[in-house]
Length: 143
Image (cartoon, rainbow, N blue to C red):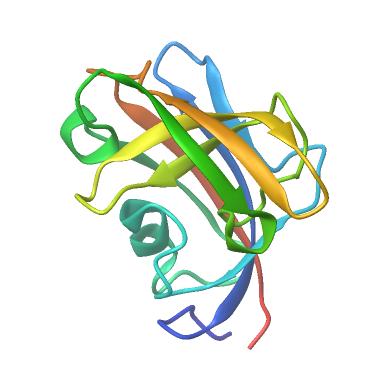
């Protein structure tokens, strides 16, 4: 069997949660997540966990707070083209997504409203000092 590598398009089932089992994000009950490894559209640790993984296999990865989220702050993020939104993002108001910022930290953003082409986002890092647990299954290597 083939193992995943940078440049491969992959289909993934995942649950991201805190150690207390509070769910942060999931593909379960929705369409599996599809993206190309190495494009930087997912948390680096998420992508790293998939490298060299065989299709059909699963693993759990724990991410320390300093790698997962930056300092606590609330901010209006503005708007984002739906085509530019992170992978797996439904274009509906009220949905929470994870956004990787230029400094490498990730924040939680809530879509406050949407129109046909844009999401209007408000960000809040409510996850400060919390580890993330990522349960990841590589469903399929598409290319």
